[in-house]
Length: 306
Image (tube, rainbow, N blue to C red; front, side, top):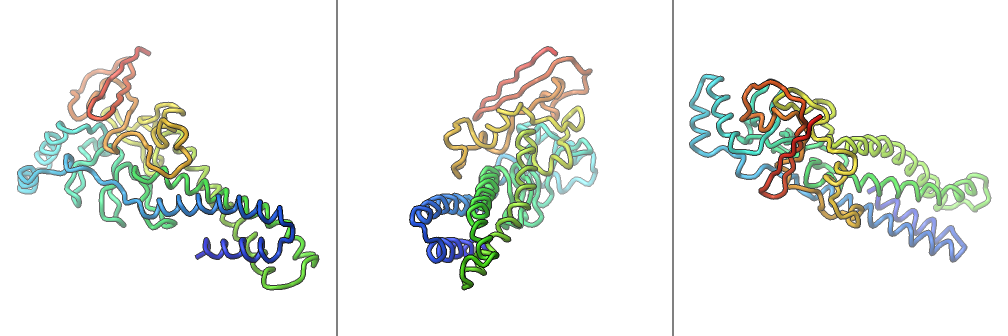
């Protein structure tokens, strides 16, 4: 409703009924509609793109589920989950060191996957549940959410900068009082108010993208075989950007899905004894760093001496 009102107030009350200069009117309308279309497009994509869920590969089979539910000993249950996880590309654990398993969805959680109590599902690379878009922000729509914040800020900045001079003229009495005055005054207040709130949220998510972390991972670091590691998925600034926006820069600012991977496995950086923490034995540490890269069904492990 705020978006629709802002469109009416800017296009009709300001540009058509208040501004008299023809060139200024056309220029303002042209730039405004570009900002408005991109803002509305990214907002729409953030709202209506459903969160990605773990594939059937991560769901327990009927026999495994029956064996797990009939077992009363917790240690045996953990071993059952461990045996299942050995067949999956899972590298993170719960804080206790156990396999990350969702009792409600009955799935082995892929890396960076979490259960959303509001959506009642496990969401791949879940970041947070956003009330602004009434949707869970995760692997499938995180790029759209970032672009929504970007274009919403540009929308607010453009409105504020172009409305300011007419706000001053109305305030100083240089323009006649009319119904346009109310809309112009509130346009400036609303645009500035939203810009301030968006600025902090946008800055925080820029920091998260630069570090390749989700909001959940910023509060609780992902746990690997050798313990929590806040930089477990940090590949460096440029590669972190590519994880979200893709490798082709011409699509970075367009709300089409270009994120790398399938949401079930993510390139990571950690100590070499963590090959697959669910398969690794308790071995001594080493002075090597391992980079695990995956494309499609193939993975490559690169070890570097440090």
